[in-house]
Image (cartoon, rainbow over all chains, first blue to last red; front, side, top):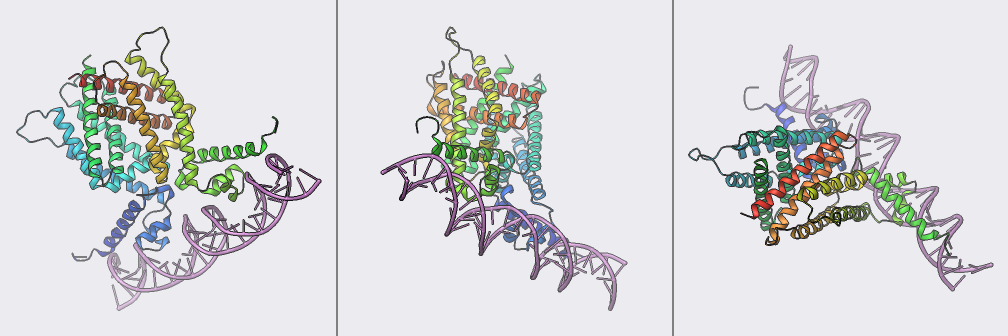
Length: 214
Length: 214
DNA sequence: AGATTCGGTGTACGTTTGTACTCCCAAAGC
DNA sequence: GCTTTGGGAGTACAAACGTACACCGAATCT
């Protein structure tokens, strides 16, 4: 118990991780609802019934993966939000857009399995998993709305306006993430998707700001 | 053979329809990849092996449903595109947006199963089904791009610009369709989703047009 | 040192799965 | 009227499924 072997919980955690990883891998070409407990067990290298020591159903496994995936996604959002170089005064829209899209693209590539999982299960997972993902995405929209509210020129937008805009942006970014996943491995395609996302984001922001100012 | 009984092909077509309908119904809470041939057969009321008389796999059944769903969706697009009253000169952006969103909302409600199927299988279906849906959506984007190109003020946009915009619009409309499906049965929510889509579309159009004109 | 906890194993069960095979019989073709 | 055709029924089977149960052995606790 001193330092070398926390082996009991340690080992359990290792198997748990193996289950999560195996599931992410198997989900790359299928979906949670088409996944059997036995497939997961085989991939992990444990006997089927041992699965229950960690999760009591595929569905609760899915909920754990949602949590994990959004931890990773929120880390990305923090990266985007991190203010630019301290010397600079106000980063332009263009700077914000460029950094945001770059962060999204590289993060999706780095955490491909997590994004793949979310995109897939968001539409087709077990009901509770879908609900959990919808909820998390809504939280992201709210966060983005408060970020936008801090931008100069948005002082007198209503909450509803803010949310309409952030919903559109999140929607476009989710779609971009999907396209990056589809384009995976073809660097030219990936760059095209990123460039398109940049243009779209700029367009949306221009539209939002020039609309609000009548 | 005169008129009363085209019964041979007629009957076959009837069973085929029953299979398609049963699949759409079963897919409402699951997904093609989690669907078994036997479930479908039971729902239809035929013996499992009879399924093969009509499709040689769940996957090809899915492809048939994609075709069928997009026939329905294209009918909607024709409705949107149908020009306003002949007397009127130029319908305003606002008119176009309002009619488009209204058409989308009512059509999604009327063809709930088809849209549900597409939204679900687009992300989680068998690979070939996903590819088929992506292809059809791309066709819709191209159609929309040529529609936009006919609008006054877009004369010197590049093809790429047109496609970036139409991609954004289609993305937003797909997301709106998803939200309508989630909101199904709660009329106030449904109206809110429609209203949000209207605002977003207007925003996007304003952004696109004021961006292009420097 | 002895008792306990618990992650993992092995066996066993009743279901459900996809599919191969043979058979049936009414509509279609001759 | 006899033959052909083809959608559907029925039987059959090996494989994979979720899960219940008894069991094991090493890390943990007392």
